[in-house]
Image (cartoon, rainbow, N blue to C red; front, side, top):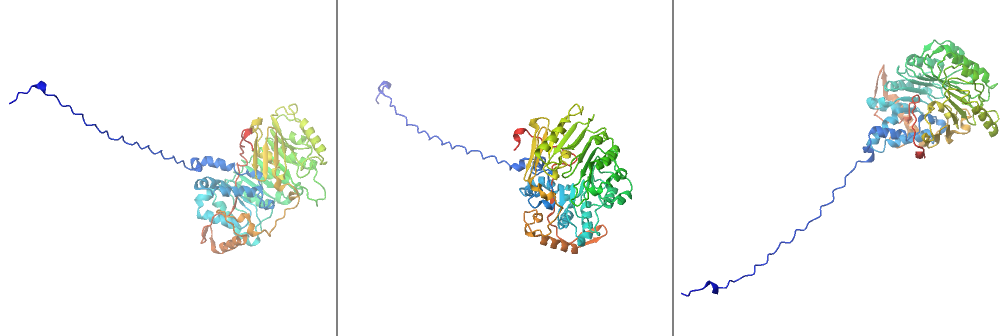
Length: 526
């Protein structure tokens, strides 16, 4: 054996095998988060906000005239089209806009009454409570008189929240038609020239205890007024009396027919004298009756005596003396005033319709300057402000009633209503109006209605889905309904299918007797 020395053995070193590192994992960038889907704009707003927006998208009712004489392109028709468009945008807009659509219902044509009745009968709890006001502004034919009485009474019964009725049609009802029996909770009643004293007193029998505002037209029948009994209106606060030249001697009988212990606002409109009148209406003769009437209500706080179309206003001094607690008075260019201790607001109305006999600009401005100079803190120690109101149309003659004084206290509070066909701007000490649709001879001539209205272009036949159909087709549907509806006492049944509402509707920005104007910064005005 060989002896081996450890020293003679050389260690063998082997190079370690290279370590193969696995390739680094490839980091895939994370996908971007999915975009947050926001609901549509209309769904982000509660119905209350949408309702406020919609109310400002249409002109307020006191700037509109629903009569057919203004034509199919009137501001009222534009406002109606806007409301119909709002409810067709989406379900959310429909839910918010349907209340505005049905709030004020205006009947301008005969076929609209059964159309609305079918809608209410199909869903009485859905649409009936939405109706707050109803206006009758159409001609009722003799062959529809009996059905009109039944239909309109049924509609009134299906509207539990009805607050006001306006009877503004210039045509009297046929002998076989009657006005509906109104709800005993009605607050506002406006009876036009076609409502006879007998019909008016029948309406007051059921509404006299709840009425807050009343507007009436005085007829020439003195005997009919004197034969009436006394009606006490315990809650009435606002009274408007329209006096034609033939009713000057009979309207004073209202002094003992109507007992109004809480009356605070009185508006008297002297209607134009017709060209066939033997003599013009004298201001002094009318003023004597007004003074006698005002003395019966010493708590009056608002007084507006409209002198009428192109009639020169007269001496207001004795009338103001008969109102010891008066706070707000509306006068017209050419009036004469005396000092008054409690008057706080004075509105001066000027227009081509009101002024001195000379229509020249120089005479108009001179009379206005004399009137302005008589209004100061010296003559009215409680005076807080005055407003110059320019009236461009008879439709705006009662604008001081709706725009309460004191709503514009600085130039930054000025606001305006700018809608198709109508414009109003309220500045610090003035109100300017423009309404091109009805300025001119249209209001200077007797009312005339074109019964040959083109049915193909009839805007009142527009359905809720935006389609249109001829008036003849609507009248045919009306006749078919008349033959298929059976009335048995208070129970009425119909085999007709439910129709979408074809009635003409009108929305108002406010309750006319509880007006709160909107104010915006001056920079927001258009």
